[in-house]
Every structure is written in structure tokens, then in C-alpha cells.
Amino acid sequence: MALAFSAVVGFFSPGRRPAGALRLAEAGALFAILVALATVAILATQGALESGLIGINGLGLSVRIDAVSATMFLLVAFIGWVVIRYSGTYLDGEARQGIFIGWLCLTLASVLLLVLSGNLVQLVLAWIATGMFLHRLLLFYPGRVPAQRAAAKKLVTARIADIALIIAAVLLTLAYGTGEIMPILSAARAGTGGGLAIVAAGFLALAALLKSAQFPMHGWLTEVMEAPTPVSALLHAGVINAGGFLLIRFADVMLLAPGILAILVMIGGFTALFAGLVMLTQPAVKTSLAWSTIAQMGFMILECGLTLFPLALLHIVAHSLYKAHSFLASGGAVELIAANRRPGPVAIPRADAVARAFFLALAIYGIVGFGFGFQHKSPQAIALGAILIFGVAYMLAQGLADAAPKALTRRTVVYAVATSVSYFALQVFAIWLTSGVLPVAPAPGPLQWALIVLAVVSFGLVAVVQAMFPLWAYHPAAAGLRVHLSNGFYANTVFDRLLRGWRLRHTS
Image 1 (cartoon, rainbow, N blue to C red):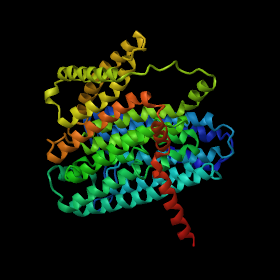
Image 2: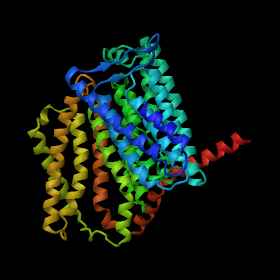
Image 3: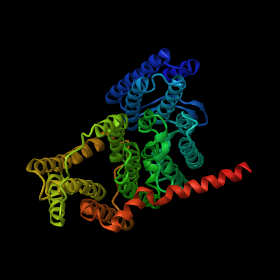
Image 4: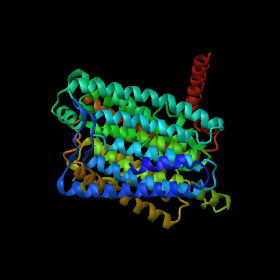
């Protein structure tokens, strides 16, 4: 409510330096943080809470407080407060600063309603409102053609995602006879719901994939850099990762559809690998960060497909904080490069150094894993840890190169140990935090085992290629590959042409 009031004040003072709107917006975000902290305290002492329903026949508005919603509530409120404070300086003197604050506050308010939803009606309305308000922020500079193109792509994907979520909500209501989310999840955990619930899981997955910019509908996210930098940071306050939240919230329903989970693994895994490689070829800082976000969202979708929902929630928190900071600090990184304060030469590892790095990383992972009860972990969690350690092996290869100084070697080994310890420690914490709220990962069947092996092998091969790519960097074939990678293999161009053709037909 405080953020909505701040938005109204911003719209009534749309020009430069709307001091009243800025102060109210910051106060509203601080108030949301305080409420979130109080909610966490109540949750710790009294357990999960749910408000009464404002509506009829199980449909309406209600608030649900549990480990998932409280975590997202605190995360969104904190990042929102940071973005609002940053916006006050970043947009100082802009002709439409008040308008920007208004749409920013409305976007944050809708995301907060989304993560606190206890009813399907509220969830759908908040989901749609988030996309609509974000659209206004993407067009803050309406005269920029790239901004118009990004907003048009986002509008198309968002509307399809909205329709998918509406269909899923209707199917869930028909399957379980209520729109209240918690009774739906309880019944789904008991294995009820039938074919309607399975179809609903498919539409939930579609909505999540579109919301989180998964291949091939990812192009809009790489072009939102035409919007002010605070918008890029705001995306990580429950906007771009709303798809992951949707899958986590309806985890019990998703478990009823193993085939849908398999599709999530394949699309999420491919998007993570594809976007991660493209990211390495981008010369612009913010564009590289955008591709990194696509890759991270793909990895989050992969985690949900592997039924590691507590780890997916942990991933949302960690990635949101890290990436919001990265976008807000991107200007400083550019200034450092402009001042010729570049890092020193990178040691290029040979094939033997890469092999030693992967062997050492897996050995560290195994030793630390057994210390944390490796044998009691789910195969999905063990595989995910192995995928993460491949990234550490890439770092280790730099430290084990012949030209690497000993200090770099020691630092990379310490990093490998710290990463392994952190992974298992945070995994234990995430499972404890969401115990009774999110389901544990079931034993994988033949299809799941095949996907687990495929994911581990794929990420391992890509990590080896990345580690050894400097050795091939000046080969003509590598130069050509870099050009195609930097253009994302032209998937976004295909979307541009399809969209332009649709708009021309629509206009005529």
C-alpha cells in the first residue's frame, strides 16, 4: 500500500527531482523490509500463517506466509529499496523522473503481491500486473528503436505467459475445487488431481519458461539495456526469476508430471550452456550480464526439473543479490577499463593442466562431500554439485598453468575447497529452511537418470572446451565460431523477423 501511494505521488509530480515521491518511495521500501523482517520473526516462532480469504467459493485475495514467500518477500523488498535509492541519483535531472519512480513502485508492489499470494486469483492478477508495469519501464526512453523492439518482444512473450498461467489456474481450480494455493498443494502432495493437474503442470512450466527468458524466447532480455540501469537491477527482484518462483511454489503439482520436469531439464540445461557460451563473446558489460542472467535462469529451471526446489530457491536469492549489484556497479567497471586499469595477463593452461584441474576439483568435491554425508544425498543433488565444481575446475586450470604465479595457484585451490564446503552447507540449510513446505527430491527413474548423466556430461564437456579455448583462440575456425556465438547463432534475429511480420500483418 505504501509503495502504491508513492507511485501516485510520483505520477502527480512527473518532472525533475520529485523530492516528495523519492522520499516516500524509499520510506515505502524500508517499511516493506521491516514488515518482511517481522514476518520472518513471526514465522520462526509461530510457523506458517495464512490470512482469511477476501472472495467467494475459494477464489479471491489472501496472503500466505511460509519459508518460500517470506524469503522472497525479504529479497524483493531489500533489492527494491536499493534500486529506489540508486535511482534517485542515477536519474537525477531526468525530465520524467517522477514517472519512472511511479512505475518502479508499482512494479515492486505487484511483485510483493505475487510472492505473498495465497490464492490463484491474486497470483494471476499480480503476475499480469508485473508484466504491464515493467513494460512501461522498458519504454522509459520511448524514442529509442532498440527499446521499442525489446518492449515488443517482452510484450508478446509476457502475454503468452499470462495466457498459460490463466489456463493453469483454471485447470487447478477444476481439478481441486478451490483456488486456495495451500489446499491445492496439500492435495497434490497426496497424489490427487488426475489428468487436469498434469496438464496444468505443463502450462505452469510454459509460463515459467517464457517469464524467465528461456531459449528461444530469450532475445528481449539482451535488449533491455536500452532502459535505465535500475530497470536491469529491478529485473532480479522477483521479475525475471518469477518463473522459478512459480515452479517452486507449485512444486507438489510439478511432481505429478515427470515428463514436464524432463522438458524443463532439457530446455533449462540447453539455455544455460548456450547463454553461458554467448556471454563470453560479448564486448559490452551490461549485455554480457544479461546473457549471464539468461544462463543463470536456465540453470535455475534445470534445478527445478531435477526436483531440487530448495536449491532453486537458494539460487534465486544468491543470483538476485549478486546480479543486481553487478548491474548497479557496471558503470564503475566501465570507468576502470576506460582508465586502463586492466587485469594482468591471464595464464593459458595446456591440456595437462586442464586435466589436473578437473581431477583435483572432483577430488576436493568428493572429500568434502563425504564429510557432509555424501552417501545420504540425492543423486540429483550430487550431480548438481558436480556441475558446479566443473566451473571451479575452469578456475583451477588458470592456477595450474605453467605461467601462473604460486599465489594464484593457492588462491584457486582455496576457492575450490570453499565452493565445495559452501555448496553442501547451503544445501543443508536450504533443505532445513523449507522442510515441510517443499517436497524432497524423489528417487530418479530411468528417464531422470538419463537426463542426469546427460547434464553432467554436457556441462563437463563445455567446461573443458572453455578451459582450453585460449589455446585455439587464434585458429580461423575459432574466429568464425566467435562471430556466430556473439550473435547468439541468430535465434534472436529469427524472432525479430517473425515479430516484424506479425506486426505488419496486424497493422494492415
